[in-house]
Image (cartoon, one colour):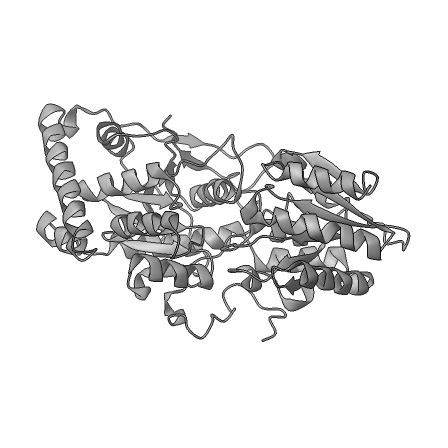
Length: 459
């Protein structure tokens, strides 16, 4: 179907997905916070964001956590960000010191996330989990990861996925009821990713940009076959490849084998602050991923005014309208065909208009408000005692269920022991640090985190 002029909240899910009732709706305009801990008629949450992946490393998950936290601060909530491997005593101390009311874990790859959600449920906290990736079902690694995810999500309050395809994948892997899984898309900082004032559109040269980790999952092997063929067909096309990884050697060998040193520029790893400068040097953005739950990279490219060519995998078809992206199967021949089509329609692309459309479609403040709705619903979930919770773990499998129950019983006993050794009253609570508006800024600024806010970090 056509997706022209559609926002993320109106994109239709595949026919085999659960109803759209579990998509977090766009809320009404937010009200300013007050000293009573309420924002208008909404409760102010104290959220613990948990993940192994955060700054100084940078990627889709890291960007999501950072931007979401900044916008939640602007809505009046408090965030804490532990970025280390936590044990139960340390995690309990953080939760008590920061007066946390809800724990939000990110990424099934994160061991810290699994650990924190388990401990938080033992201590009676409400928990939310966001899945950022897609997994298979057949290989040994996927089977193991899916069982771990099933254990973690057996007692989760609510879950969030970044696309409808990701929701379907998570529901199938974890066994979660579909009504507990919400779809909240990613977004892009359109204030940072802007088009160049003037992008040359001469017929003398077309620059195709690739910014990606050079690994198998990102389709680096496809690039090895696609780039030489495109260079053969179009002498005026040049490639700029930004990123590093184990597959970089193959790309270097390809460049030497086909004598493309002057037409394929290898930039290596580039910091996120330089991504825009690389993107605006080109005309077309090429994404060759073999699996993606969402793909923030194509949003960043579209926000910079680039026409996108991407593999039709995972949640990628849900991200951009049809006239802003050319999709192809993850096959070298079809990718070359898609690039041919992109080169043909390139003269019709207006970078400034594309930027405005992306700015209208995706906004981190909107993501924060939708996530806030999920938090509110999680807080309304009924509390359960240990026996009621163990019943959920028993349903995870004949042997795995019993093992999970044993793990939770031990965790519960350790928690009770900690309460005796170190009562909660002996743990000093951290006062809120209120940061005033910066000079010349206002509460309506589009830049995340520039309002009066409450912030706490635990390292």
